[in-house]
Image: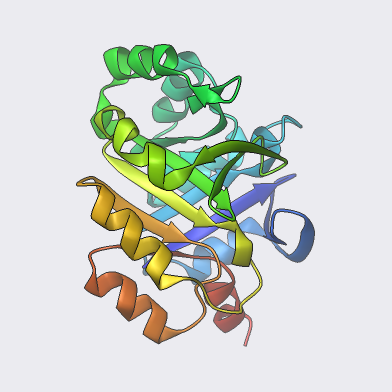
Length: 221
């Protein structure tokens, strides 16, 4: 299991479908509660939405955990900056796409400068279509059609099922199973994972569950 820390204005938050703020916690409190975990997924929501960044907080988290970090990484230089803060992998999303198409030029540049081992590609979807710009804009690209084409440029995919993100109403295991069948890369799943049964189901098909509200709900009880 991989806990998710989503950062907004220096605080740890959880949003419902990327919109309504459902939870806000102090970073130090969350890091202490997650002390037994080795790997943390960090998303800079301010960076993703183009409203600033949380670099100081990212550096602090990377000093205590193995981190994969995303949110607002739109250039090779920014990717290098995040890696320099101590991140093991960078997560790129909106920058993968330009004018409704895959930006192979950017992906090739990133591959040449960083290599695929340190790169994760985030495919955030709603009703199967890829979302960009902090989930604010939908493309017409279907995740099942493009995942194999993106495989050479990363070591891992992060697939977020935004349809159920932050709602604690369960996720779609079949959705993730179909994705896993389409790629030989590692796959991390996020979005609506609610029960231990769902976690086990994902792990049984070699998919890593990335958990937000599931962990925070138990953390606060």
